Amino acid sequence: MIQLPKAANFKDYDGYLEEETDPIFYRWTIETKGRRIRHTVSVEKGTDVIVQYVHGLKDVTDALEETGFEVEVKDGIDPRKHYVIARK
Image 1: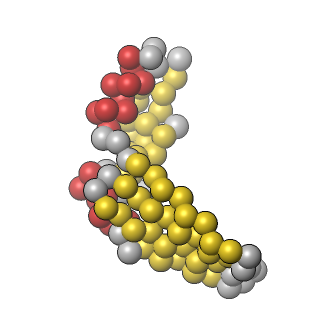
Image 2: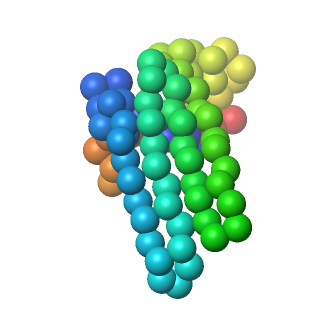
């Protein structure tokens, strides 16, 4: 299963902040620009940056179908995302 942000809600991720101190300290922020999502995750021992590029739903489903997958798109618990189920 693949989760893809819905185009209309893509910017909802920009400025996201999640921070906890118990049971461990972590801080997760998200910045978006174009089709790029930049995750910055900090814990007591350091910080990592993960860059994610999001492709359009049609591009993803077309690529999966062209490689022999049967594709189904559903809404899920997170209204900001498409849930793509691919089966061979």
